Image (cartoon, rainbow, N blue to C red):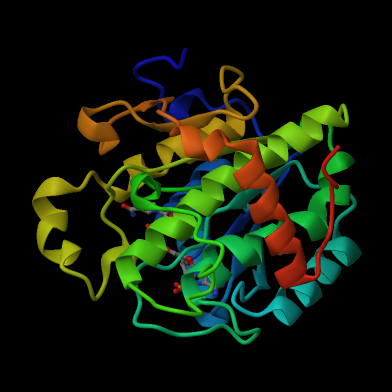
Length: 301
Ligand SMILES: NC(=O)c1ccc[n+]([C@@H]2O[C@H](COP(=O)([O-])OP(=O)(O)OC[C@H]3O[C@@H](n4cnc5c(N)ncnc54)[C@H](OP(=O)(O)O)[C@@H]3O)[C@@H](O)[C@H]2O)c1
């Protein structure tokens, strides 16, 4: 069981570890980068906008002048960018200790990615699915590697509609956010099952931040409720940080805030819906993700 009051002060030294965080220039990704760099990790800040990334990096360095930070450009809504990025990571690093699949978008008007995927499924799930497959060999080379994928309470309203996964028939921006966040959770748990079946020491975990005030809510009605309903940004990062660093976090586990409705509080095991562990559905999602991205790995046993 997670300690009720786990805080980032309990993060063990991360010296010697290389941590890659997607969406590290804003919100929870930025908080996570700051914390992990503050504990000695080499942090690769994977950001889609280099100017924003540079500002974020400078802000961490202002707090931690010795921070080991590398900014790298990545656009998860473009498979070519994901491939180019993974290649650059391979050319600069010989192992990866932690991959944090954190970047995300929420409820935009209908758009497609460069590769024709619905933008939320494409960015939040398919981009991370491809990235994980392309970096898995570097994770295999670390001593105690972990992949942490950030889902959401919104996964509770998600479904796996395989005949409309990419909004071929219809689109509702909030329900598609939920679908993409359910895909994040199903992917994280299926990934861990597949890794375990192969005896891999790479662990996959999932986390959700509850409701935390970040740039994610920009342009939505949530901006009105952020100031009195949301927990602060730094606390939203706790479950992901817990999953990435705590000895008590279990492989395959799903962690979120322990307060009312899981919206705020300190990291604890979060409830997993039955569908999120339905292996048939998870297999189908995996296969479709492979077909759509062209990145294949860890074939089901
Ligand atoms: N905040 C919450 O209450 C909450 C609740 C549930 C789940 N989450 C999840 O937490 C994660 C982090 O969100 P946040 O709240 O920290 O939001 P945020 O402040 O908006 O940060 C999102 C990050 O993702 C990046 N990003 C978006 N599209 C990208 C792309 N195509 N390629 C690469 N990076 C991209 C953004 O880059 P730009 O700055 O360039 O846009 C930004 O760095 C997301 O997965 C979100 O679904 C958050």
